[in-house]
Image 1 (tube, helix red, strand yellow):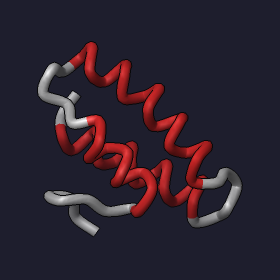
Image 2: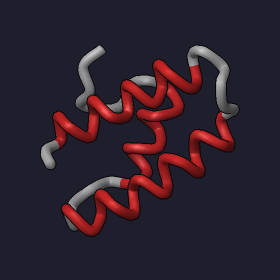
Image 3: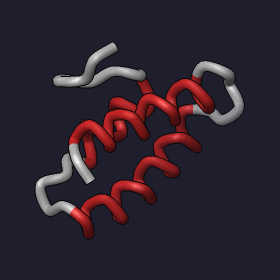
Length: 65
């Protein structure tokens, strides 16, 4: 997967769970961490912290709005 794919996934997570308040930040962070494990196995350069931040805020360094 590419950086663009990871960003799109983070954006979807934020839009569906955070903005609609279906899950709280803690639950989203756990979900993002589980996904990060998968992404790390695919790409050793994957940045777990950046991904979690993007999931929680909807944006991250290098992400388009």
